[in-house]
Amino acid sequence: MTDINEQFFKAYWTPGMKSLYSDKVPNEMMRSPVNKNGYYEWNLTQGTLTLDDYKRVESKFKITLPDNFIEWHKRYFFADCDCSIIRLPYSMATRPLEKLIDNLDWDIPEQLIPLGLIPFADEGNDAGPLVFDTRNKIGKVDFPIRVYDHEYGGDLDGLSEIIFSSFDKMLECLTHFLNETKTKKRFEVIPDFYTIDPNGAGSTGKSYWASWIDMIKANYEEFGY
Image: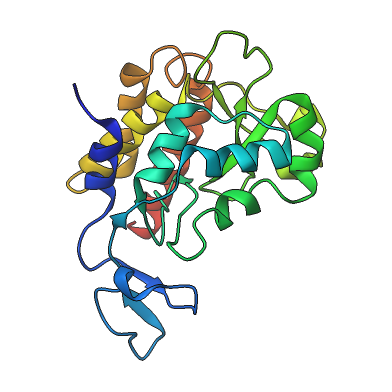
């Protein structure tokens, strides 16, 4: 059976990846000294968090996180998880749940969480958070994913259509994206999401991803990247 979590981290992390140093970085996550610009090369290190650690976060914020998201997040400690189109919450060994909690602890989540919309990541173009839509959670272990436009201040008019049918499908799409963009342009790879996730990215999410394709292609044609 394919371990999508392992496949994702294999696609995401490569030796030489750098992050800005701070005092929360443990020695075991550092592959290099801090350079003159304040950056260091970081390691993936084995995670040590337990399910109970996440259950305490769920209890504090009165939320439900998908078990597969928890399994993904606790697999390793990692200093960054910016996938360009989506920024997932990193997990530092010294403050492992800090970014996950930050995503839940501000004014927009205060409006969305009581409605069953759980912010867990950031949209890559800074439109706002990605949310798990748990409003029909009876009998479900994974949830569809939408984007919330933060400029709407909690109003549901800012909620997108479903862009991924589940967290598993999002990981499959991101893993494919990270692997394929090593040799292809990003706007050439995103259309593959439609086939990988036909019930999310390939249906209700198609217009959302089409807008990404158009934007990235326009930037490439004008600026060369």
